[in-house]
Image (cartoon, rainbow, N blue to C red; front, top):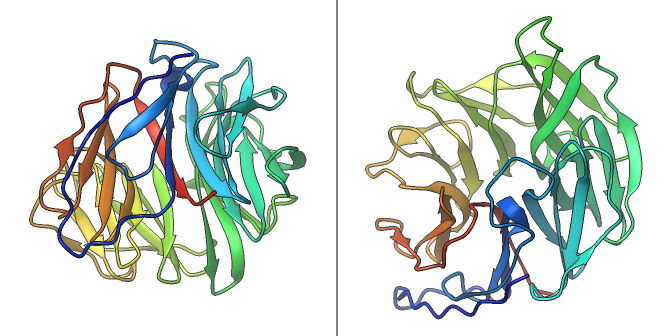
Length: 314
């Protein structure tokens, strides 16, 4: 473990509201840091200095019930760690299989460990829900909670290795409470990220893929440009914003999309329109913006790359 104090200052526009709470970022090597404003990062903890796809990586983090819960691990050990303040962490009993994604909604945490659903009413004890019964090595990748036309639910995207019989296939599924799947679809267009906003879930992926759904089950392709390699999408509170392609794209509703005049030099991680945007780049970098025109790389110490950030008010 390491504790590092960083002092960074990045001016915000006059009149912009400071976020009141705590940011927690997690990533490879089990690296974790926290911040009160997204600019001054401290309380660094890690298991390893190596940015390897092993049992030490943390892929995602969510906030709810006054605590942050981060998940990750590898084939040997699935990890779940929790904190209330971003400083002191507790690790829950190890699971079999990687826990790649977690969300909070309707008063509970919902996670996915390979093909298994997990849920927790307190963030301290997780129960095992339904398992996807597809033959092969099933991996969940990303998830988003929302309240769509068919009700509140968590939409999960992932892929499956059919042990060499066919190319790897992508899948999408949904669950209302983490105990069972309400929908599942195999061999879907490849998606790398998912977000919810304005009454729609939206997935993004390679070759300009953007698809939206009002219920988390039926998806419609949206017009962009072929060749775009979209990797991340966030809901800013006012619009969807997509990074990873040759240009950034945005939409107020998930239905009509337009190319932004400026590129985003990082993978989007967290954005609140007109207040603050955070993104990551390989090498353990965090980028921040307050005007959404210029992104500044914050002077963090060397370390493994970050994968996700959550914000909350413990």
